[in-house]
Image (cartoon, rainbow, N blue to C red; front, side, top):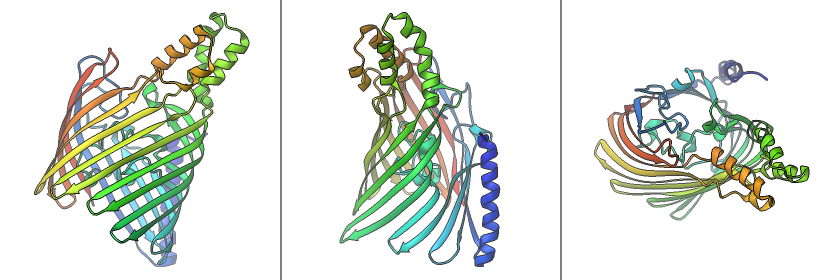
Length: 397
């Protein structure tokens, strides 16, 4: 298998080559846009660092976790056909360029289009722009929801459209995609490889005056052989020592097996009235009836604009209940149930809540200065409370 760095390099070369060749045929220029964030921050844990993904996991001040640069190339082949390439380079990944988006768009009519290629999977209200810091008021979008999953992009086909009925506007996105990447990043070493087949993705957004409602979801077939090997196989000695029959042990492993359906659902709202804005989102996701519990993420945010200055207060929460596992219904032997519960508590232990106060100052068009302070508490006793801050700049060009 090719390394991610080598594969991304080859994709960059291929797509940039197309960008140079196709416009020459269509006699249309390539438009280039960019965005970025440069931010300094630090997390001050009272005990151990909570080790959230790309969230100040090193001691001392850090530029890496929130600093990134993006470049988007787009060209119109004719009035109905265009293509887009987006490269994303993160400091936390040593600025290794990643092809985050690469798709061709065909406009069916003024209200409908299809896309095929590498697409943004609709996991959140702001999936398309989550890395464009200038596009939102937060120093960083709420971490509990915008967790930077690898499966936030996938390869496939999308149908997008909108309908306007009197004062109502309805937008919808339907996708069929495939994904290969890593999950369980909180387990360290960059996560564990997984494949999601036949991802069926849906996003709906209904707008009426100052109110927007949105919801969506993903369902896929999971190929989690590496999850089984790395997480479940180490349980074999404990199962054998339990004295359970081979049939009971086999039933136990089948109950926890990760090769089952993956589900992701989200919903939320945005309401704006004059200088005030209210935002809220909630999601639930996991691999059903497996060793993975259903995760719940949510946040509630309120912001107010003073001319160029915006202040935002939000609370976010990520919850994993290691005892809320559906596979328990399939395991009857008491010793095996206890082994499974102990395993679940070790793997599904990423529960925390955090309060964040953010400031934004629009220095000039395309440039915003931002700062925040945050305070949180993790459920693990070895982590406990943590605090921190960040300051930096977001820009687009």
